[in-house]
Length: 153
Ligand code: FPP
Image 1 (cartoon, rainbow, N blue to C red):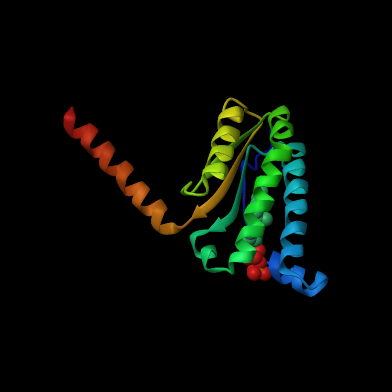
Image 2: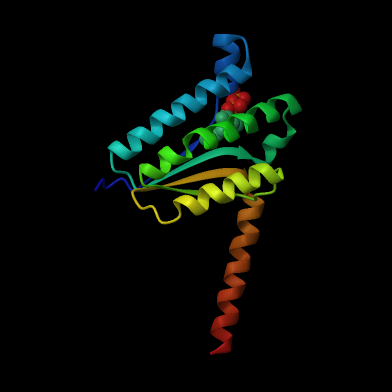
């Protein structure tokens, strides 16, 4: 087992890379996804238990609609093509962030999570529609719940 237990990556710079090298931000996103695949492979090889990818923040909704559509198409396409492979590789997929996307994408994400829920080689956390505000609210709700449980005793 690798003493390095968790690697977390904030995906950044893909758009700039694409503009500089291929004259298109979306080409950078496509290339970024190839890098994600290499990172997953290396995480498995290195036996690192947790990989978190911060892929799309609540701030990212301010981007042009065309770019947002491209990103979510990439994501849908990736999951449709790769979920069986991720499952065979014993990878547990967990979405962090608020799942309020299209009905189609929500159900794709839910079924990918469900399918891989019992896997144990690595946990791949995919942060989508994440923001610090949501995390704080959820932490406070959990503290409140714990406190209520203690008071019940
Ligand atoms: C960072 O580059 C990349 C993003 C904000 C989007 C990444 C998301 C995807 C490729 C969708 C699919 C994701 C996975 C992991 C399956 P940037 O656009 O912030 O680049 P910039 O800093 O140059 O603007």
